[in-house]
Image (cartoon, rainbow, N blue to C red; front, side, top):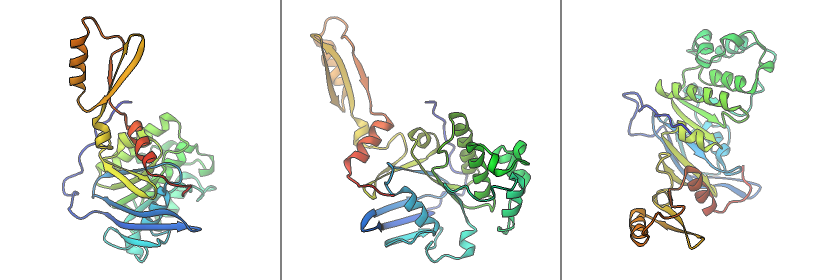
Length: 300
């Protein structure tokens, strides 16, 4: 994986009050808890990624924050208001890119953008949006004939049409091929560089590592860890595995001080240590440890 350095938030966007603040969020379906006391803060100007297995409650969390699903309990503030009671002025400040792409299938791309522009008070010009998402050549193509990646690009254009302060991206690259996915990543980087706060859910660890300033791992209906991608897992990340062959068998030691283990090995072995390697846990290793540490049933 090639790591891409994410630029810091634009000047003036990093206030002390979080854009999203959640405390004790709870939601159940049929008596089964999907969210069981989830806490979450998202800072202004950052890209925050929610990671978790299928059924961990990522989509339910996003829908509560968007105000389209009622919570059972907990305190939620998005842009300073409760999404459950916020009005049209609040909704004009958020953008939503959901997994539902059914709107406007018979319209051309340009017609779809022109149509939905009427629902916002200060829409971005259609030509500007087409250029921003790379759909200039598809402007006259019917939405129903677009590829999966092109539809996701159009969904982003519609989601940011009203110049939102905060954009929700729910599994934005599901179904995209690798080329389309990486092109989409650049769209997200551009949004953030322009000062928009981005909250996305994803199944792809590489995507979170590439885009997010911070990652939150959801398991068992709660947020079990929050940190920059390179720091997620804390104690788990600090342990290295030293592995080598001795008398024909593989041996390994898990330690926070690999240099000491190497020193002792090299001192005890007059020749080269066969198969010697030192590895640290990858983001995938840490993620699997985190979601495996908290039991959870089938959730949405």
